[in-house]
Length: 100
Image (tube, rainbow, N blue to C red; front, side, top):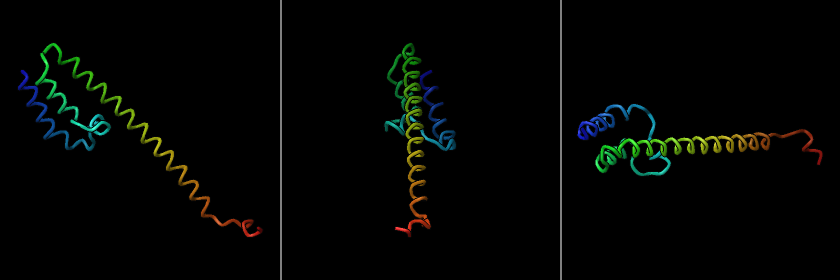
């Protein structure tokens, strides 16, 4: 049963994952293996009884990493918008600037 699960994940990694267009949030945020690779490692190391809890913990950690990545992205976007506004107004030459 473990062999079938691992082969299924390898098939997913080879044929489906490259076409999704994005990376595992956990791997992107923390580095290390993707969730699919981590699940393979969990399958190899754990007993059948411990598998669901370990896999669920990994997916919860991936979800938390995804949320943190989205927050960082929003912060960068807001910061960029503020910088764009400042640059826009600072480049304008206003008529009353010549009065000084």
